[in-house]
Image 1: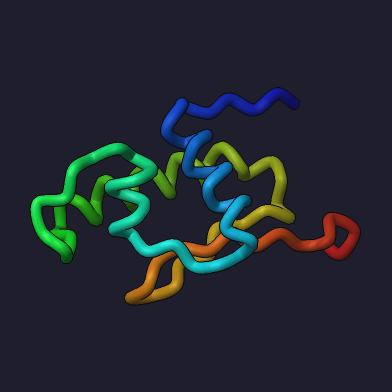
Image 2: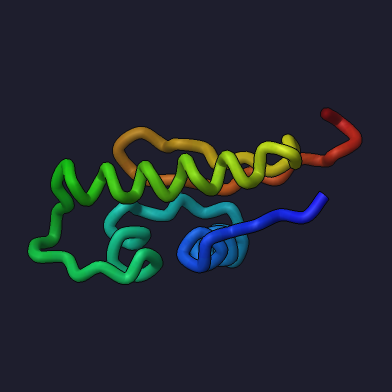
Length: 88
């Protein structure tokens, strides 16, 4: 099965992989990965919605690989979890 990612989704995926399963804050995803300028230190609802939409798209793209999941860490960000495919 071939996987298709939008460029920003692919960049998000590689950033999550390179984070070595650390939690990535939504501010980082919004500014550094999605390439949007932050007007203030905290992000608002519109910015959170943009990050959530990117995460949803990426989760949909990764659905055929259930051993790769994106965990929502409430109040802190998102984390990529890679399980052993044989355990699923």
